[in-house]
Length: 277
Image 1 (cartoon, rainbow, N blue to C red):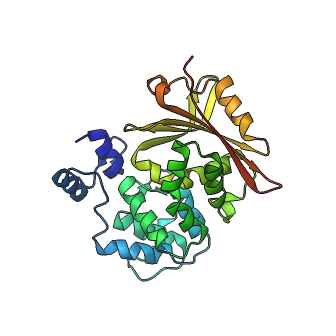
Image 2: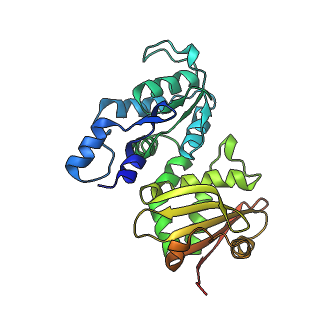
Image 3: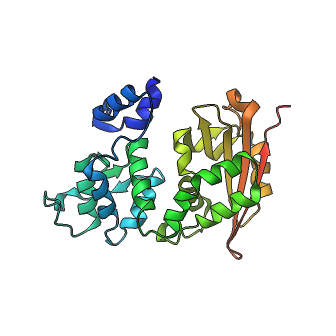
């Protein structure tokens, strides 16, 4: 089995900067079954994860969205009471999730993060069964969004992205960076087939989001605009040659432009297949 793919699924627990550990039970299960999958769902902590993320501490929901969008969140672990019942803040919840293995912890930066695809899968499953409204719906729509992108169904893509316009404090759309959070969440099911890279250095600048396939899937360049238009996003991809660095994927590359209009609250989308001239 592919070692890099194994790392994407089960790596992420760091003892030192140069030493990381893959989750041993999951690696063994993956080898025995010859399949990369989530092998945590049979443990009792899976059910407890749903309980913890449903706790209504101020900012907990927003921070979990940040974590799913591959951001890191600052945590104060010093207040934790070393039990699984005393919770007074979101810091207590996140510290427990570090102990349970659902989050990694960067000691120097004092930040937590989701370490790998297996744990992302556990968070997604828990949220889908929780009362998270539009967040749950967006995660459930993710596979359909990916298929709509492959078939260049721009109206359906725009509709799904619009549904992922989450009503949370961190996602009040006022810049292209905030829109990138939504893109990560809306396409979260793509993590099994892609490496997603923000601000990818390419051509004459930085592409907003690049989807680099690990399997036989189309590569994708997604450019985000705010109060402009999707056509401008496509033109920028071409003019700044964001496809440089993706030479191995030019025969199967999608250019995706997405725009959010602040006044109408609408998203628009244009998708083109790269023409290698």
